[in-house]
Amino acid sequence: MANDDEVLAAKTFLTFLRNGDRDAFLELEAELLGQSAEKWGALVSAYRALLTFDDLAAEADLDERFRPKIWWMRSPFPGNFGDILTPYMLWHAFGVMPRWFDAKQADGLCIGSIAKFARPGMHLWGTGMPRSTDDLCPTAIYAAVRGPLSRDAVLAAGGQCPEIYGDAAILLPELYSPIVEKTHTIGIIPHVLQEARIRKALTAIGADHVKVISLLAVTFDDIERVIRDILSCEEIVSTSLHGLIVAQAYGIPCQSARLSDGKSAAEDSFKMRDYKQSVGLADAALDLPRKFKDLTWLDRRACVLPPSPLDPKPLRDAFPFPVRVHGRSTARA
Image 1 (cartoon, rainbow, N blue to C red):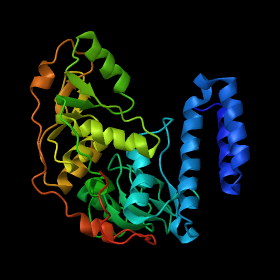
Image 2: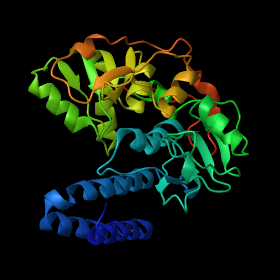
Image 3: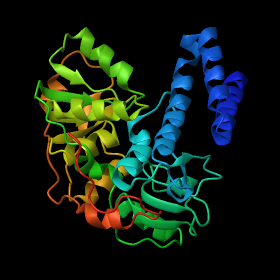
Image 4: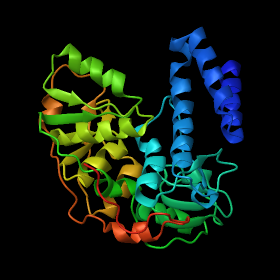
């Protein structure tokens, strides 16, 4: 949990961003890093990303109607791949650069399991939830949701939601399609909170042939690094939802995995099942022991591709904010 100094620094950074005071922002950044790069580096990097987004918008001379107020999860600092996809996707797919606002002030929610943060009149696009029991706002505007389980939850809460499915990460191959050499047979994408544990266990058994792909990301370059890492593998096992979605979107066979104590069979989370149902998957999660001394569990993998990939056009067409770039974007190598 952030301490009082971190809360104050975060609020001050946001104030400078809202006021367009770049010099003051950079002065605070230098002051904090001068105190302790170890203490402040992750937080500074997270807010520097927001400044970079403002710079991109300024260079494009964006009208304010193309800068919707959007909230996305920004912790753990410096950032998580699945969350920072929101500004990346809006920028490259629609020419829109969102301004980050607190969920209580934002006009929209996009990528992430964050539907419970919706308020009356807020627009949701490609959003999901981590569990079926989340309280949902029935008067939010659900333009599209991650999958049929999310839609069922919206309807059960008294809301309305069209049968338009898709996490916006499925659009990534339209936007960035590098040619990457295959260097690993298998890659593992851990959730950001599990990465250290899984890396340590793999190092202990000398599993250098397994590529561990980090999802700690805060910049657009970080996002494209993750994509290239995924493309360098022939198969992927992922405890991260967006690891699974992105791997399969790029045609890399993938299996979800769940940390297990070995006492019961691993089961996918609600959000994994939500995505899988949207693309016709019914495969089981791979049981990944919390403590392992060999890779027998990994040898049991059964990586697959979706039998019914989503048509991205309905998801694109459902985007609820003004669009500066229309139609399919030119994929960048």
